[in-house]
Structures are given as structure tokens and as C-alpha cells.
Image 1 (tube, rainbow, N blue to C red):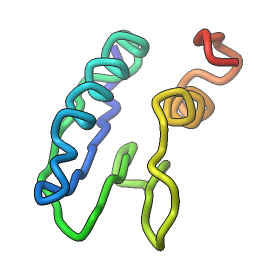
Image 2 (image 1 turned 60 degrees about the vertical axis):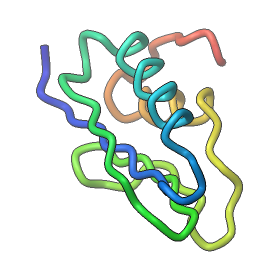
Image 3 (image 1 turned 90 degrees about the vertical axis):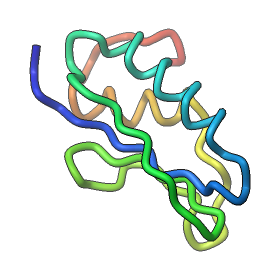
Amino acid sequence: MTSRRVEITYCTRCKFLLRAAWLAQELLTTFESEVSEVALRPGSRGTFEVRLDGDVIASNANGGAMPDAGEVKRLLRDRIAPGRRIGHD
């Protein structure tokens, strides 16, 4: 197993915890051999951000849309398992 770390920062005031937890289990299930850890990090100001090893891969910052699971999985896959089919292609 590799030691890739995913971090999901979510707005507590916006009640994004359930969405963050659901996405975490989706990523752990899909990338069980590639990802060693998914951390949930409380945030504020409407934030929902996904990082891989410290680099932002998906975010709703600057008024953007909330990233959906399929999009996040594709972005993550492109960085850690290029060419792999994940069912959202």
C-alpha cells in the first residue's frame, strides 16, 4: 500500500460533515490499495475542499460548485492510478 493522504475540509456551520464522511468512505472503498488515509478536517466559510498530499484537487472556493463524488474520484484517479476504470468514466 502506498502512503497517499487525502484530506477533506468541510464547513461545520454549513453542516457538510455528512457529505465529507460519505465522500471519505467512497474514496477509501474505491482506492483501498492506493490511499492509506482520509482525514476529515472541520472548516468554515462554506468550504468543501479535497486535498491529496497537501495539494488541492477539488474545491468549491471562489463561489464554485460543490465537487461531486464522481468528479473527485476522477481527479484523484488521474493522479494516483492513471488509466484505471472507476465506473464514472
